[in-house]
Length: 278
Image (cartoon, rainbow, N blue to C red; front, side, top):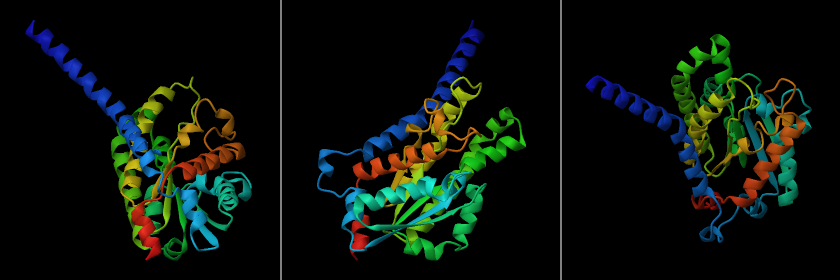
């Protein structure tokens, strides 16, 4: 009887531990989102749109760093979300927005971090008013290509740890070079259809990965995490290109609109406003 009780207790603890491992990240993400949600107390603060509308500069420099999501995959330059959002921002603020797209197809977080730390983008970062960064998808894709899905899952935590470190170092370096710039990060999305054999598993693991993005953003004075999963998901598969991974022009438009919506609702940090004025 004692053995049976021990087995039952061990099984219960294992289930509870696994549930916490799976669901706690989403709880943390929701908590961070609530902290950034518009409130009555914030009505005297500037939204990001208002901030860029009222800065004295007549031109807004938009730098984009990252992978093929940034670059735009098999679509014209003007149809990637960097170009589309820059155009929308120009309309909203009445200012000229100049975008510099430094996206590199296939780049990993480790490689982007190496380039950032080596000073490849230093001058562009210093001149930017807005810096959009998306990276991490290729970290996962390269791991999966090297091994079967089950072996890849065993390496998920170590892979996630490396990504978290790389992203933190990237955002810290950007903040050191340009404290007043807004850093825009994007959630990683699940491109699988709901009936895919690994959809449910990927959907549960995704918050663990995205939590690292929210934590990196939380460590910088002025940042937004774009809620990409609101627009690219199993309900909107028509936003994906034929490869089933990258957003097509319509998907890029949806991402651009999501960024604009958050710029209209979220507020620029007081510390960053002070940096800009000094």
